[in-house]
Image 1 (cartoon, rainbow, N blue to C red):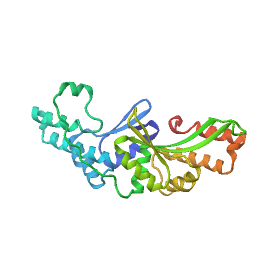
Image 2: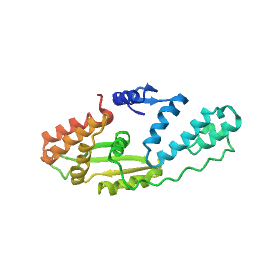
Image 3: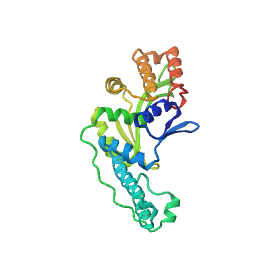
Image 4: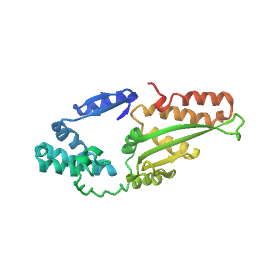
Length: 256
């Protein structure tokens, strides 16, 4: 599921696969494939050929086994249904409360143990950032600056804690950044705030491996702010006002 501003990207995805539908919400869009035939003949072969990375690959293998059971119509039997629920209990974040009540004695099957890749594919990383990344411009009140505000650029990637090994690989890949953990939400963050690293490593990477979705527009605005900061414009009132105008149209505030 993506923000509605990424509708054009999902339309390209739908055209690429030649199957599925696009579901439009108030602020979101979703590309969905529900046909077992299309899943088995189009979607699964694609990800067999181009494997996912991290725990998402383990989820894919479980999903693939469920599709195969449904293709064989095993879900129409009690035994087959219980097997599918057992697999689902280990898929993504587990069973819903309703399914737990309906199948209280189900034992989740064992998930495949997959190691984070030794090397990071830059094209995969760009796609990952398109879905999970954020180019953020922070603007906070500060008496240390004559204009009364501090501007800080942040590059952030968010993922469930189970993929912390993968996120730690990014620190080595970029040679910068930190890993933090929100225990309340079981979320791990990879964050780069060092201005020199953003200028010398993050921005050059995405110039070389461009983003495809609307996030590319956020990246372009991120670069504009970086250029203003290089020129020390953020230390002037006119420069600060320009940065605030750019910030106001980024991320969830972007309308097109």
